[in-house]
Length: 127
Image (cartoon, rainbow, N blue to C red; front, side, top):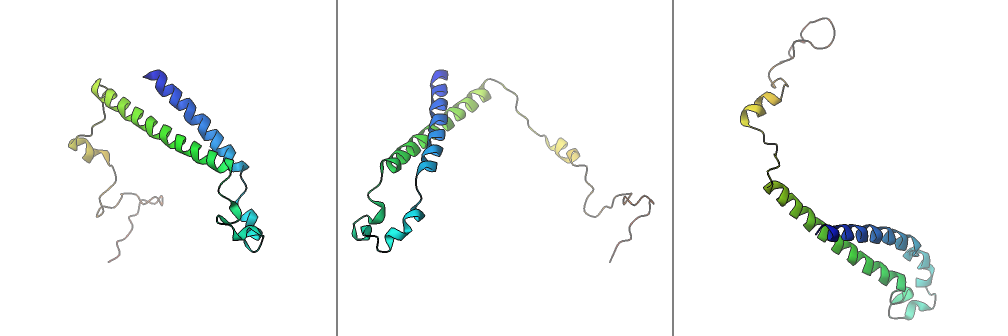
């Protein structure tokens, strides 16, 4: 199972880099905006973009593979977490007694003894 996970991680990284490259290579739709306003191809069924280029189809296929590898890596991570829980790896659990002593902040109706001004005077309360 370990070699399969390694293979999926390698494919995932390669597909991610290839997707970035393919997206950067492609021309944006805004570049052909002039063709949409009477450029001759505006009377076709698919407009000025055509039915889809090779790069568009390759990007779609790679995106599907990327999502499949992402999902499979999530499944592997879940299985590892379940196995780690069964092997007796200690988990952090906070008891109710520790929860009260963990916060050292004064309550809302209490004021700190020193206001930080250096004089030691308390700040008068406004009513």
